[in-house]
Image (cartoon, rainbow, N blue to C red; front, side, top):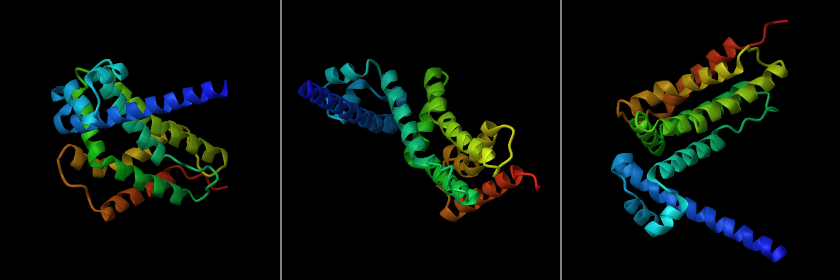
Length: 213
């Protein structure tokens, strides 16, 4: 029984490794050519697998693109939203989150992924919905829970934690992301990002400070 279980675990690990290998290959092709121009044959070559193997794991280019988007969003969310409810230095926690979030939003791979999602949204609305759910909404849910905990601890006063989370994240990244995403500008220097995040943190803490006793 133990040997059978070990074999199943190994098979699962190998299966996951193969899927990651294929997704990594797809990332290269999609980023280089865009969704429409990319072909499953090119993706198979980039991933170092046969076309037959590729179709074992992913039935279509759309399914593979969806897996890539979901993977990209999950990695970003896991890395950015590690908020400790026992950390009572709200400014430090929010600043660290804001800097990480703004920095991740202007990474070339992330910018390219967003552009691909936007470019395919009319024809592939499911991809757009997947991106919103696995990306922005996942981050907002995590931040909302932290805000709710801080309300319970008496450190924040807010009637709509979800909206507050959207507002904070938007303030942190929009001024630095939009010129890069839509204007094709180079990423701003770290000093500019820090200035924007500091302003967002100040605004957030002023807006949701508990009433004086």
